[in-house]
Image 1 (tube, rainbow, N blue to C red):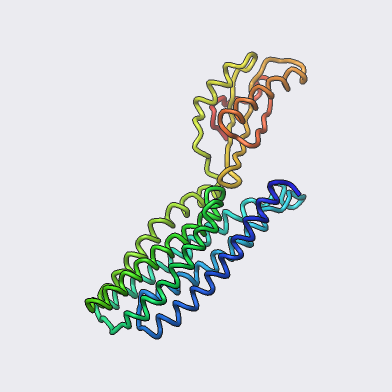
Image 2: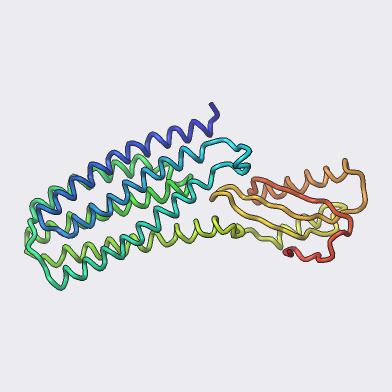
Amino acid sequence: MSGHSHSHAYTGKRVFWVALLKVFITVAEAVGGILSGSLALLSDAVHNQSDTAAVVLSYIANKVAGRAKDAKMTYGYKRAEILAAFVNSAVLLAISFVLLFEAYKRLRAPEVIDGTLMIAVALIGLVADFLSVFLLQKDAHKSLNIKASYLHLISDTISSVGVLAGGIAIKLWGFVWVDPLVTVLIALYIVKETMEIIRKTVNILMQSAPPLDYEAIKAEIMKIDKVKNIHHVHSWMIDEKTIHFEAHIDVDDMPLSEVEKIYDQIEKVLKGRYRISHVTLQAEVDRCYDKNIFNI
């Protein structure tokens, strides 16, 4: 088994255990919210239910992304994780607006809440959330898919802290308005965090160009002996780490064996300095009329 496959398997196991924890938290908070009358607990349960689905989706996407390239998917299956990250974030964003609406209604018409039960359930959720965050912390920096799930878990942890604080305020001072206020803060935090992931995943799915300094790239390639021009440049990302780059290179008329030496020099620059994963170059001798770096 390759190191890459082993990494996917190891990550998949952690995601699986996190999914089980989320199911437990969801049931506990749903029951606790109904019994205590706490909107914050119920909203956190709904949040956790969506997170459970998100984590399960991440688990499936992680498995799919580890599959090898084949005749059907010549680029491989890495974008399965990007799709999962987008779906997870979009669903969570929609839920956040529902929570804001429910909090608004509760602020206008406060209800009696059992603060003791609210505190107890929030503590259970907080412990389980901390454990879930710990399990995915390392892998959150390696994949947008896992990062999306990780942000779900971070928001859950913050939610549990907020619900716990709200329960204490209700228990000690009878501030029932704290319950919908906590819900509003939870929802606004989720909106902020998910918008960034949505932006990144949409850019990748739309094949937007990665943030490369194309003028600097052109200048470096033009320094290579016998290279006259670089044009018709296209670059895109398969996932958040894999950059593809293709271009036409104007060179002097020469044997193919000499052209390949130029290819090697260009690839060394692109892969070494700009972290580009896959390079496709087409050598030409005054073939294209348009010599601009970006053309159709």
